[in-house]
Image 1: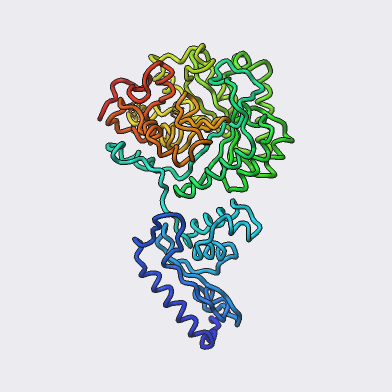
Image 2: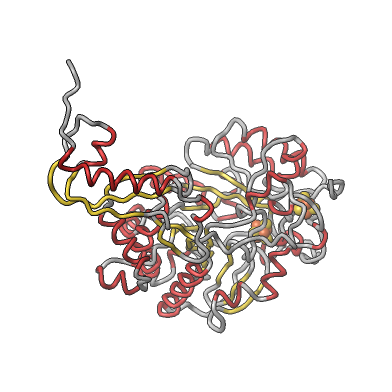
Length: 486
Ligand code: SF4
Ligand code: SF4
């Protein structure tokens, strides 16, 4: 059967205009597809108001039949692939273009559209993903001056696309763990203060071209009396949400999921049942296992964190094995000697490397076991294995891609040790983030000097401080001493 020929003459002129737009787009220099701040309309974008529909399909398949009728086509060069895209735009894409083209205030756009700020953010980010809009690169970057001689495979860890507020919304807790680093009384957070903090975080993320995440924690964050309202308000602003807490009921999880499904829910275990319950209270182990089933039934990403001590190091691998089909991720942190944790025995420095070797080997066979300790990157470098992001995705992330906020407004570089960098009720997050003190925590210890692993390591300053050393001067005592500049 021969190919049926379509008489193209009625829409020949429109087809020509389309081809010209495509050619212009192909010639558009890729180097100009950059934004310096915020969102920018892709400068290669051309909108074509057609009086025939189906012309894009006709270019691909000359046997298809365009029809008279209005259609808005868009042609642009995608910055990621350098390819020319031709397609009809969705209502959301048109709205994203309008918002950026008219420099609309995002709050106003949300109000006028009767949608949440988070919805507006989502359509802007979707338009960035398809290349219709460009977004300026993250302004959360490690300065080359402070991090000069990194390994090339660590270079990808210079800049953070997401900023996390680790928010201890309450000190209240239904457990009393032996290693708790802070049982102090602090002023209760008022909901109005919480809403202002979320607005401040939103401004910070906009100004730094990053996506915001709120990781709610405590105490037990669910014991904060206005938790659901705060969770809803954070969802309305388009933040990614996570919970680091204790087991709770299926009903509460379902309620939170109707607002927004958390990116992950993290609970803690300190070893197998007997040891765990000695630290965290009788019956806790069983409650956690039941709770993990609740998370699993709802496909919520479940994480279990263990605080590593000399007392539980032999239980880490058996626990990880037990959790193999019950969690999405299992990980450990070294004990920091603060608060009530100071009475526990930290894992031995001398045998730590052997422990890491066993852990890595087990992790290669157990997909839920994740790597977290920055120091592991030293082993990986020596074994010519790929480096990883360490504790916070960028080595120590203290005051870099996250800060910890306490109910009374204190902002700490990391909650694992006293590292006050300001109070959010007195200064904005941006002022605190760019303060010289926060900068000191970001820079890390002088002892890491020229170490080429600095971008993905810098040890754990909380462990350093817990050992009575100076986190700005001294090296993590668990860092193998032979690893200076190579
Ligand atoms: S201080 Fe330690 S626990 Fe805190 S972010 Fe840095 S490496 Fe992680
Ligand atoms: S010197 Fe610092 S950055 Fe280098 S491996 Fe040791 S702790 Fe990590």
